[in-house]
Length: 291
Picture 1 (cartoon, rainbow, N blue to C red):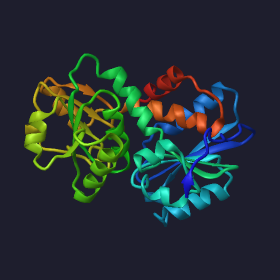
Picture 2: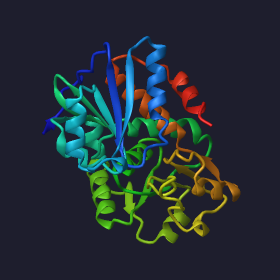
Picture 3: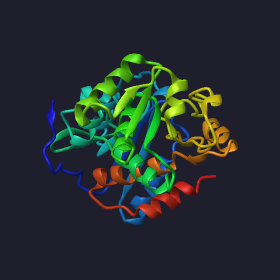
Picture 4: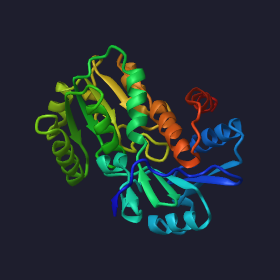
């Protein structure tokens, strides 16, 4: 694999243009409606499907990508648990995915399969809009997987001076710390060897694990470590109000839900799949229309 050429060739809009989301346990995703409604608003014959590995005989990402491409899709979004593994099955990797070490958007086009990452920009935009005047010089990130890599880089590029990283997979946390140190130099990121110490030092805490999803209920850390002075952010958006956010807000914490990342990553992915610029406000309205 090689770095993708810049600019990356976009899929051309046309009759029967289709895309999909590949993941596990994604039945409650709001992504299809955002894409479909925006396509309709722009006059495109555009469909967007769910490919839920929990409902299929295989969880092999290579096979799922092969089938999606064979079916004529313009591309796919990729979510938990495939964001890192999908990188092994593309022809080239755009800088956005190369920096993060994971992909959430794979475009099938004349350049072959090109992996992108719109999670980074999606989280950064949502964070910028929602952090307000909250201090964010230091943060604790829970989760060093495919989404965690995007969130970590977005936080550090959005004003966080020091980031603590924790993951139940120690090797994943160490790998993320190593890649960020290689990009930004020593002193910007540390392993959270002791969550109590890291939480005490942090202005805010971000959940980039799947804990809190409908299929994985609970909180990503002992809520006794969360103080009213903390801001908290969650990338999970189904449910939108996770137990982590709910319990933190009850303590008086400023909360940032997963809607910003969900909407803005979709905005960027829509453009990659269709070559057309969507209306972020309209896609946000579609997201908010869910009850």
